[in-house]
Image (tube, rainbow, N blue to C red):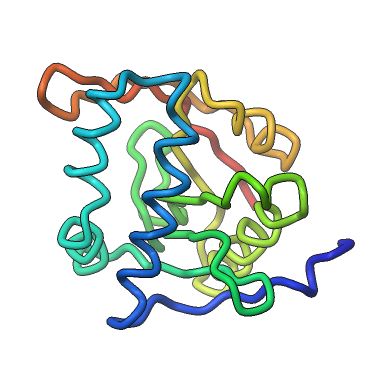
Length: 175
């Protein structure tokens, strides 16, 4: 793919958590400002995207990665291997992409595809039989996932507390 050689990916180390948090703080609110209320964004940023929460997610099995364009961090990815999804009867054979975001100025450059290709390669290396992800039903990234080849497996409304729901499509790509 054109331009993809300019990207590199590395696992998040202890020293990288502030870098990841900086990306989160720039990307996440921008991504959801037209979808969620500012109150819900603030709640989710604290609940799911504090450094403490991110580290806890890693301890529970999520693998975190930073993507760089030259020397600058421009995106991040988190996924869990051997994920079980009862509705898809996966029996622990899926990779669940928990987070995949690139800076707005990097969108349309192949950065998202580069991250997804990396997740697919890691899933296949681990012997998983497909990739699964949740995406807000109003997120324009739905089109990216469909273009990549994901299908909408089912929808769900997930209570995250404080009266808020995550209203997602669960999208699936079998190998």
